[in-house]
Length: 623
Picture 1: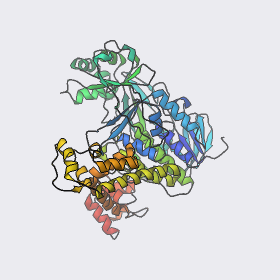
Picture 2: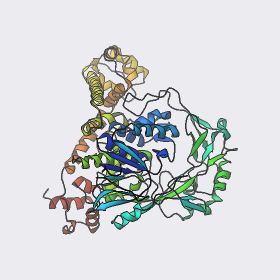
Picture 3: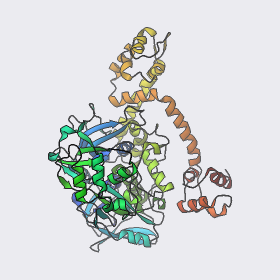
Picture 4: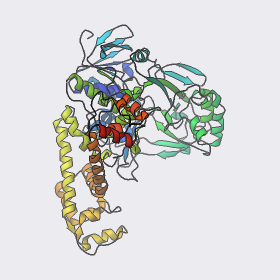
């Protein structure tokens, strides 16, 4: 195998690497996935869950594009919840609690069933670069494996350093060694590197917990699923999570060890995730709070191991243990392993193109935590896009780039490329200016046609999506064109404390009222008859209701997106010399010269570039 030249080599088999390898191989590229441990493919290093606010939208987008994360999330799920259901559909976010061992097993099974994909277990110690182009990798045993492109998805392994209290040791995650050599080589090639940190909580023995003292957190009564494919099914049984709280006593016990916490006392200089702080940071930053939530999450169907979400820490193990035993329900807790912090190398993502190819070395792609992100979902989406674009480059096809109004994945990558990040980047719905368009329910409508064009989605899948779209659109048209009499609708309106109508009116107008639901509308005879004849499924009914109720918001965002596309269509010539624009601020010239945006729209989103700077650029370009 080492004598052949691969189209794509993927280094690292976490969430980013697994998606990258699957995408490249499924697009027909001969692909090699290299990992330091084949037993830990797609390992859930932190919490045993997929999805959540904005992250759930990303998983559905990955699925619509032909990735595997949605499928594996469904097959390994032990609980499903649709978060934010009390808010508008732009905020609805699916989340599953996963069986950690089954998740990794299902991922490996899918990868082994993927054609064009080879595996090799060893550490990659460096790249082979010739004339500013990557042509392969070197392993720790001295093997040279050639390739036309390479995707680096090293996670927290690049010079990873684990901290527990006063102790620290090299490692990529608990029980696994770190990766060395790559950072040092990339720096010699001109790349700018930095350090980030993240933490994880202790894992405990569920047999030692008293769940009767905690609040049960069950899954949804009618659970849904992530994947749009029929090969997965919603859960018929679920495992509950539980919730407890810290207390002032717990906080006092934790404070005793603050001077020995490397995440807190400054021994680790790098920045950690703002929105997933350690318990030390929470106690310090929110000193007015006398308690903090702890979510007690099972690690699988048949294990007694539990993950204590909300208790990430790098405190000494004796301090962790003593404090946790003062939490209600944890009085007799036994540890499987303590929490720890990990410090690792990353590379400022402004050094990448929107395809995730590096600007300095042709054919080299970065995806996941190497780009400064945090989270399985963010990593997996980058891996998918890097794998797709590596395959497209080898096949001499046009690159694949998602715009901000097309996908959360597009927002994520655009934010990284144009703004960079100084702390672990996490996706939120608030980061997307077009989130009403980028809902979890319509990811297949937005992205399946693109996936089909890439060769990832099958014709059967495309037709299924088109049928869903057609059936829901026809139902919307039915509501627009069909009238209802006061006699038919007023009893429903009265029951829902909504104003009665005095004359016949279109059903669309009445259905658009915020307190009127699809269930209410089915009580009207003509609607009931339509449903009997057409037999719409849950997804089609949900899509119809959203299109009726939020038509105004959706149309407004589409108009705004169309305005943005005008700037997106104004290209900036390759190698444009910003130093000539003396009327532009020095900061803008410096930032634009470094980031090299491709369009005016991208330039406008670069941190430090003002609207007046963009006006100068437009004048110079003759627009």
